[in-house]
Image (cartoon, rainbow, N blue to C red):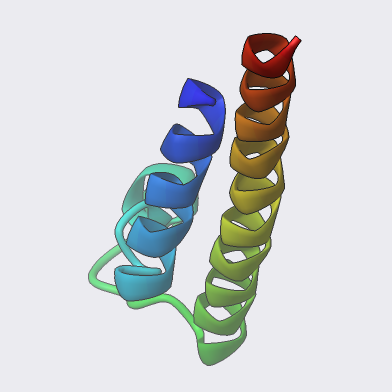
Length: 72
């Protein structure tokens, strides 16, 4: 369940600030000031969306497992 919550939080962070990790991942390869491309930003937003969906499934699976363990 904690992994699901962490992945959901990461997904929302990436959706809201898609250029945050760009300097660490790609920005150091380019001389001078540069900004991430639109395609990079869109792909990061998409990966954030996928992370939210995956985290939701993990969280729901953990809750279901906990509920079935408590019910028996």
